[in-house]
Amino acid sequence: MNEGFAESVARFRAEAAAAITRARRASAEARETSAAFRRDTQRLIARAGAAAPVDTPDRAPRPPDDEDFSQDQILLHGG
Image (cartoon, rainbow, N blue to C red; front, side, top):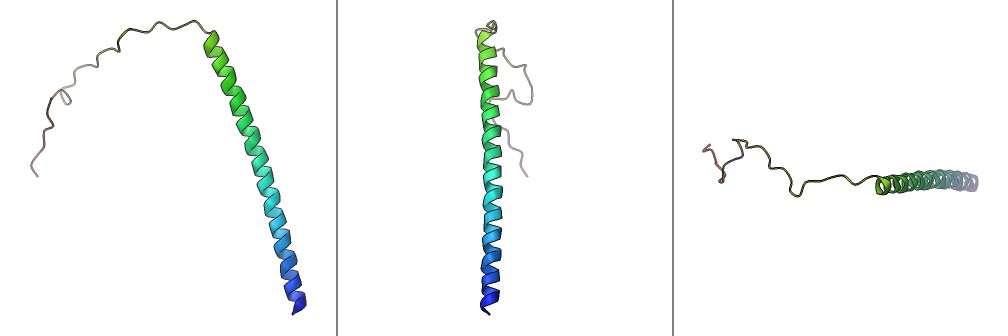
C-alpha cells in the first residue's frame, strides 16, 4: 500500500512540475507579445506625431434627416 501512495505522490509531483513549466512558458510568451504590442504602439504614436496635422471642421457635420428618427417624441404602438 505504501508503494501505491509513493507512486501517486510521484505522479502528482511530475504533473505539477509539468503544469508549472507550461505556465512559465505561457507567461513568457505573453510578456513577449505584450512587449511587441507596446513597441508597435510606440512606433504608431511616433508616426502619428510626425504626420502633418489633419484639417478638421469646427463642428461635426449635421446628420441627414431621417424620417424614422426625426420625431421629438417616442411613438408607442398599442399591442
